[in-house]
Image 1 (cartoon, rainbow, N blue to C red):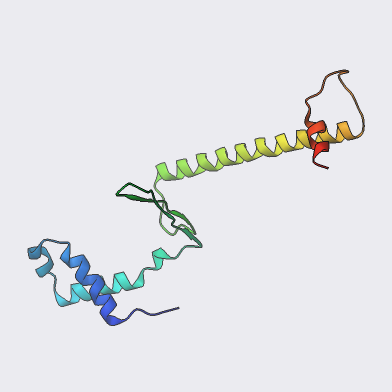
Image 2: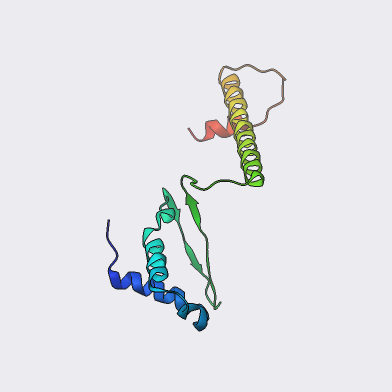
Length: 136
């Protein structure tokens, strides 16, 4: 783990203050600037188990686009609306995964039935077995 130099910390505070109105930036006391520097240097909230940030630069366009996918433990308190949405998304994901696994189960049962030569409907076929056999 690397430590930030003191000049890097001061640069971050100076950059933050430079984006404010000069009168507001000048109104901060030494203790307030040190408190800002301490908060910026802590940054425990930026550590993620999965941090994926690809950038897409398209030719002939002056812009580049980025996508951020972060995954980690949520350390903040959720609002009631956020809790409801999280529960809804969990149930929806569970439902979609259940449908996927049930579908895979039906395909496996169909392949097993075809492998055993069981013909439930004479002269009718989905063609899955023939396609499966063509790979082997």
